[in-house]
Image 1 (cartoon, rainbow, N blue to C red):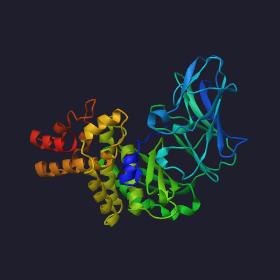
Image 2: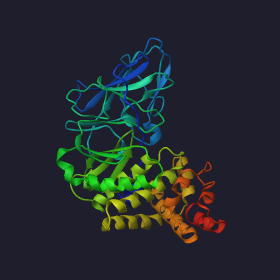
Image 3: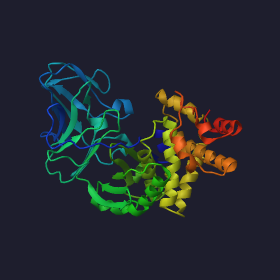
Image 4: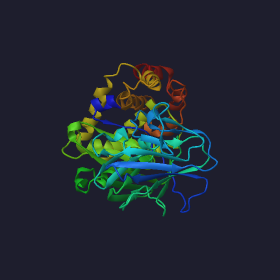
Length: 419
């Protein structure tokens, strides 16, 4: 993500996933993680859980270590005795351990970009991030519940049940971001699409893109992807200083965190803000299709995010300027997208930004080749693209066939962008 921030000024993360709410009565076979405010330390949360009598030895594992996210877990203890990490994000829990407790420091809202996925606070507003703050028990058959037990919470997103409980998403799906006391800016609905804006600061509403322009981009995206189920998009806007010279987004279970400048304007203005949201919306709409290599998922979302932005802000010079910056940045990467994808799988993310820039150039080349050879567009073949398969390195196996490209056409595109 750092490479993209340096080139374009923002970062993007993973597709969205949804989750359900628990019933009003918590089931007996349930692990409940209770979140409270510290009674002794300002801007500190405590999290604790009680284990059942038939408990066994296990581990607590935090997602952050696997996602490249800084952890916020402090002072892990079992029955009042400190526990040390086995390695980053992993704690061994003995079978006789009954109560587990740790602390989570709340950063000042805006101190870090949204892509850092940190728990933070600004006045009454609190963001609790599962990825950085909630290690979870392993090898458990119990359902898992997060219970927010903090006074003076008037608005909680996602909505909890009558006991203040939220069902945790599966550990292999998008992480959970819980917003306490966000400002509800507004909601827009059209056909099967619902768009909601949440905000950290009541005075910053005018800094955001309009709901109506955002909705236009979402409606267009919904027409090109063959999936007509209801779509709910919730954007949580988090302010950050324009002096940081970048913006970021992080996709979670049911909500997208997105930065906005709270003390000035950035390059490309509200077009950049909309682009981040529309990029992630593509991920959400397409999430029912097979998993794709990172370069495919991010490049498609980038290409269709900029296309949707052209619909959301027609004839806006900032849109074309942003696209030109993407294409100019694409030339900075000499390695092909599949080569870079292989490096990313080995934890080398130094060229990850190529997925957002060179990736757009790749799909533009595919679209131009389709127009020249078949008189069609990439939009006409999007279902075939979403259903394509790839080898372990991320090289397409049947994309050439799905697009009906000649060997000569495909080889030219592959050598220019993938190898």
